[in-house]
Image (tube, rainbow, N blue to C red; front, top):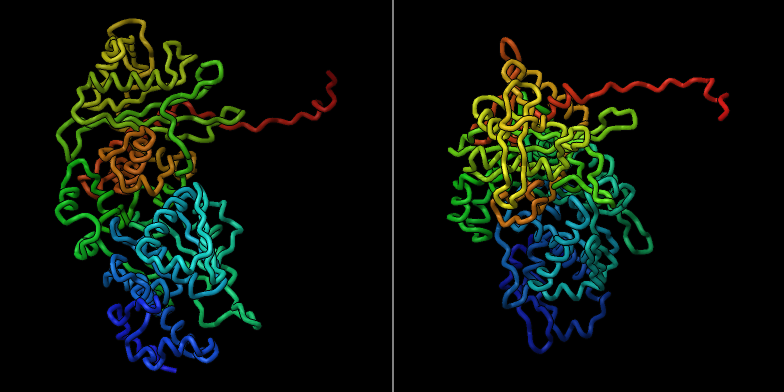
Length: 597
């Protein structure tokens, strides 16, 4: 049997279609040039068994050349050198970690690797997992259609593809199947032979160990009479494909460990590239477009670093909180843009706290305000069990303090605010009263009429100062927070709520991760999710620093603001001071059992 090295020249230009046979013919002498079309018609499969074995070995080892083999004469997909390396690694190593920018084509290559595996390994079950099944199904259907268009001969290998909103399954003639899973506890108990994890940077290790890693515990068996487990097969393969995430996270540590295993020849491979590599080959956006996006003052520096430069961002030493813990508390499925109403049209009995930070951005000269809406969830005894950040709003740049105060008042009424504080769902608006924040507080204490709807927005009053409102009596809802002297306590309170997992944040989907609030995002729900992503970026950029009197936070990169973090921290501190209730155990009285009503 020939060595695999004899196929080193087995390239795209060595093949052609013949009109007479409609069959792909190898003209390369290294590919057994003695076999002619007429001989193939006469000989049985057994007579050419060794040739088929050799071809199978070659195709398994060179997935990129297999796709060259079946590429049509016109159209199709031209694989660049970096894409060929990535495809080969996913076929030759027990685990490959690919960190690539948007526009690289990583998801397409991932599906090409999966389909190649399903064709050349009989009865194998391969899955791809994403943040949700809906996301995985959408990705699969889109890339499947693209793959069938670029390589029409693949349709001969597929029995039936089926896609729906939250499911995808492709059955191959080899008996293999491709399906999807979610990066969630719902995957627990599922079994596949190989697994590809999409956007793995969003994972936490606890979920991976408990639900995803056991998926590939059962190896594939051959379909012959022996039905054995091949010792030469990469059973239990798990590949990771993602854009970059945060330093100190579980996935960042996984990559560091895999780099060591790569160096020690443990069967692992780590690959990565910035936007410059696909741009060099003409894929994705052009260099000028990407540089313009990078220099755009409205583009988040952290988001660009993760989505295009493949940099793992954030503080490594002395981080404000454990970034893995912060990613773990993203459990809220849907934002709340207002207080829900019951069937009678009345506001539900919820409690909301607004945190407002007024600041001047380091990258922009105009005022910039962040408003965080927190919803309090209590148990039957009145103890706070969860604090949910259900919405984050940022007024457009350049708004005056009066315009910003109008926005705060509109939100107050949208979340069930009322002049009667016993009936009001909004219990407090916590405003940073240092320097610039005083201007917003002054405006909140003025009597306003909404210029858009002509509705009376009323006049607010402070809870904790002697400052007089324009009209008395007014709604006592504004808490003037002066952080000087208590900054250490605010930071400790924030850390405590994250570490105890009382604080809950909105989930971040993959389709939101690469967007900004200035892109074509019309839904307010999407904007709330994007601002939550910005919040996590801000927190990951903060380091703890000790002073002689207390502790403070320092930004690793000055161009990344901390307005959303500050607004959240102020609101949490107010909750800690005035709304927490110690949980008391109910005393069980034996006489209660003897009471007869």
